Image (cartoon, rainbow, N blue to C red; front, side, top):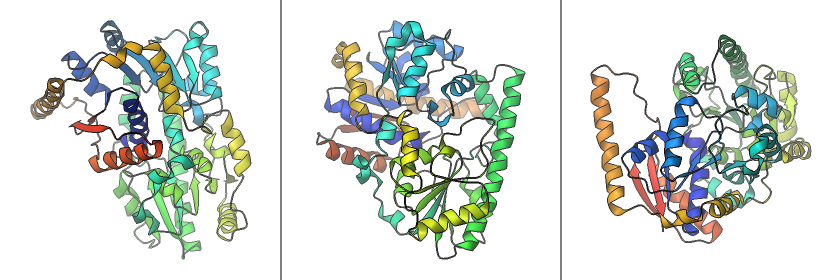
Length: 439
């Protein structure tokens, strides 16, 4: 998910360049195309998922055969789930699966120890490094969250809405196709579980819509900013609040971190934003029903827990009247201590230390000028061919659904370089979906 992940990738990449690496950030499909065309120099391939579907196993084996070293830093970690076992079961990760990685970089102690126990014969490849993504939530990276256009909406209550299923740009059944492809639905029981989770998520979504309308009426002098999930259709949300003049539907393509930083308080249900809000020391309210079916209840255990509108109204009043500025902050951070290692804000260097110790020779491999040109050409040619293939009836072709924001990338890299007092890397925009950073 571009909006959620790009800045963490740029953090790791910028520091990697300062240590002698060249870094290509691209989608798995783009990388696979470049590799098949022999345009990728041998190097380290950092993957975002621990579960390896059988249709991906042959690709990863091909990378290894051609001299690549594989590493993993999960973007969908276990930190949302009440127990590590629930996460493992949901993601269909098992001790017999392929494990082609030289190292796996975990967010915290629980994930590290959980994987070590599951893969006992390969326990040495799991490291508690923390995550570049959670590092960005700390005060060290506050300059990345300072946007004047967001400050213009203050004071505001921020509702972060992770209802990409019910309010997504695609019909909810399209997610089922994706889950089949990832082998996360393997039998009828898995499909039934998904439907029940979707029912629960949709019910919470509709209740949150009514809650926002009530908050809008009860607090007419405050702006109510709602931040939809990155895969949500903004027009769906705007249509719901046409008559609520103090409700603002924010973009879901800019930095959520900035909206959190500038808010008076954050309200959510079952969202990763709760974890970021606690780390940023912003007051947090976890409102609405528990997510009992998917068991992703770590976020709802953080901040002030409210289930009725009367409880929510009281909690909001406590914050805006300065009676409870830091709702349950200490208890929330204690919950996170075992899940995320964020105090040092140094995960990028820890990850690179491990990669350097296991793949020292890969510093020698660089992208050639001709290779960069060929990557650009090959992507354009493929895009043209895909248009013709769709025109003649092939509607199953897949492509990434994001476009890199050049200004955002340049500004982010500039700020990260200044924070770390390192030289600004050179940025090559290979395509709309791929970036190369180098000295």
